[in-house]
Image 1: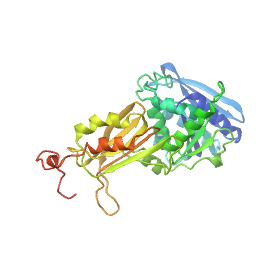
Image 2: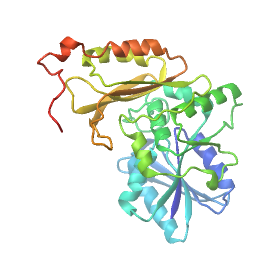
Image 3: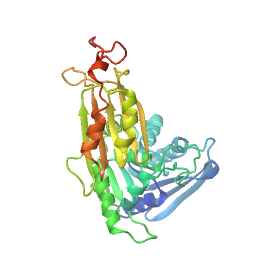
Length: 348
């Protein structure tokens, strides 16, 4: 059975996208899940513009992953057994498409093929969502208090993993065309790989094709994908160096480097962690460093150690960023130090 997975930050965008997509494919069932307070999960199935099933249940843990494992997958298996060849799956807001796919494959590997992963979003809201400093729970996007992700972190993760963005509009408020255009331009810089379509009028044949290996590669810590051109006021600045960076100076400079940037990503070569890439991932007001794993080698077998950062925003001072990062490099005296700063001379 083939699946089109719709992921979203908010239920209104998801519902808008799934209903518009289903309107042009009336025979295709639409499976929607929502996670409410106290672990209550509601499931609705629509087909031929009719609500054909509605159920509520209480999950023991009341988490998003349990929703996928204990409710979504059994429903999909049941639909497949009844002869359904294609279904549209609208995930609960805040549920990542990657986790949903992992949950589906963990239980029924080989039974389902994901044709497309589409993020439903209102472009005019994207920039504010990226800069929201609250958690998903605090901003009212999920009913899970323990979820510490910001809306921007979730949104950026889904933009990287998705192959399609379905742009939606509010049914309650008039659209701001200027903000909407700005949001479309921003998405183009953040996720140059996606196919962007208006949800109204989109059909399955128009959606991007899901490549799971490529999606996971884009989502890996330290991965950098840069658009070839700027989009309106937004652009992406790249910085590369093969020099080691001083850990304290880099940490001190990172705040100034990322200030005003919607998205910062890449990998850094830090003195004292010579064999490990330090991954940088920053969305809006929050930036984090993590273990990016051992340095990879290129096709010729050479180790690709070095710093590669990409910063996306609408007011980036290239000279200031370059100056700040250049000042983080180890000095000749530090490189001669017998301490941890000297690169490992042994071959790998």
